[in-house]
Image 1 (tube, chains in turn purple, green):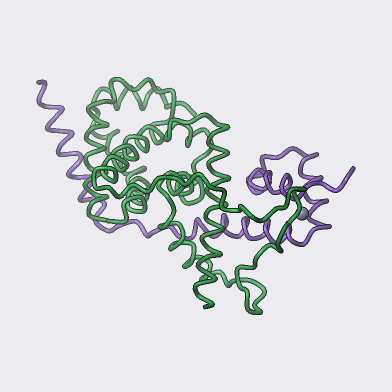
Image 2 (tube, helix red, strand yellow; image 1 turned 90 degrees about the vertical axis):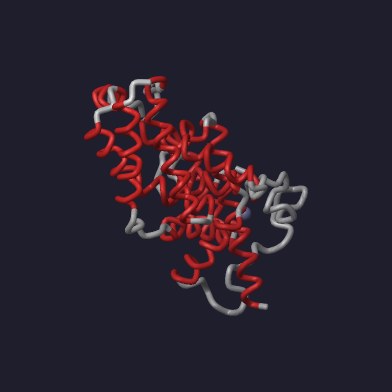
Length: 83
Length: 196
Ligand SMILES: [Zn+2]
């Protein structure tokens, strides 16, 4: 197998991060990672970015119930008004 | 994933308890998503409230082919985009590849892959990466921000993202990949700013 083009390898990196690549593609990907420090760095960065993105989530707002009450009021009004 | 038919029938008949359960389950996600899209909590509350009331009115026409969660997200998303467009705050997606210039004509690295932490450190510590990511995500074009919020923050499957954004699966995968590349590039840019 010739040394894969880095650009082609990096085009698959999202599939690898998501575990969507098949066994063969995974094996080729990590064989390339073992030989190529630039692709390895890029892969780790993308993986870390994806992993940490979930941690940017906000705490649920304290006033959510009030908003849902307003929605339910509007819903109840719409339900009891057949027009 | 399609809707649970029993739940959908109850929602379509206007059953208040089922509506409250569904809104309680998905409300925090919808509000969190809208807040990050609009970058304005009060405005996001208005948008989500309007979207949910509109969902209630429109659910008779919903065929249940996607989950209720994806359907609600789509309504919130469309309304948020309309608001942003109306205020001229919608950031369109750029055509360029954020990694342009990385590879030579043989597909090899033309430059060495840049580090997130150029001066000595081996890696960013977790909290600094999260802080930087938040800033970077908020600065992304909305078409990339929405796909990342749904995928990485709210854990939507590709199928749910397809339903919420009205895209084909192949298209969603491409958008996720591009959005991640853009996010990585934005984190890198933030790193360069921090170091200078
Ligand atoms: Zn490589």
